[in-house]
Image (cartoon, rainbow, N blue to C red; front, side, top):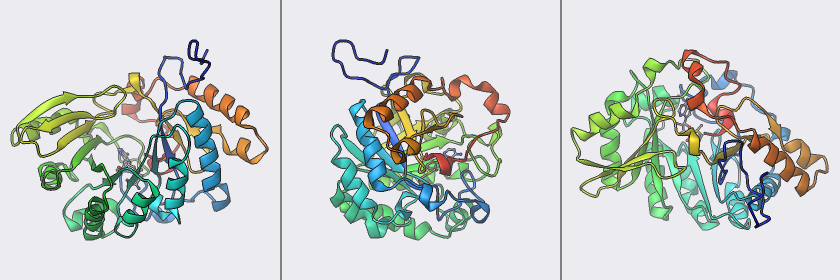
Length: 339
Ligand code: SAM
């Protein structure tokens, strides 16, 4: 059922006909920040024990199998991926996997100043840096660390190092930073880099999510369009963001709207957690344990069969889970998934 007609190549097709082409690999659940919409109680969290975390070799082996099943793009994430020592070695290993066309990373930016150059040399294509406020006190309140100047230096360093694209991710939360949307956009425009606003999702550790705290994408566009002339570019097939280009040519704005306008029907993403579980959806409640196979003499064929079966059962997505807005028993926080 998952064979491509005539070609004999098996692809990661699910029940709805969606084909997975992009992989997010979480390399650790740990983070040195404590963002209130992600995993705010850093000191109370029991991290995944080190021995349960996949080694770089194990990640590369799983990615090679995924690539043989059609995965083309990898994004490294976490937790905070740059807390993993020698991450450039993983980048270089992954860029060498046949079939993988690009390796990018999402980071909080703390270690970027020091590591951007080595990452680019290792083959990292681009980096997305999370930046939710440009006010030091507020940045510290949201992320739990007084780190704004260092993160901004990290973004500049990433640009200097030639990482491309460099993008900004901002989670807009009503009452916390929704009055900074224009400031964040101006910051990005000055550097001609893309900025993406992500709607707050109910995957937070504090349980503070409710729909009133979500700033819908439409509201952001209404705010921005009053100041900057915009041209709608739409959402490319299987992309997460709807793109709006600034008519003066100074970059673009993306809106990621899983809550107000979900885009699950052409989702092509799957996730590998730091402890080797395959998740076919951010909102997947099933565990598909690949580490067990890798560490117990499983073959590439066995891995491929388990992966194909897991992806086949991919949930329809958050767009088909309206009850989520009234609260749900989320199985894990964002830091343990790899956003
Ligand atoms: N530590 C890295 C970082 O800060 O970017 C990578 C991991 S973080 C989980 C990946 C992305 O998920 C970040 O852009 C973060 O802002 C976003 N994120 C975390 N929790 C979220 C939530 N509840 N809703 C929406 N986005 C969230």
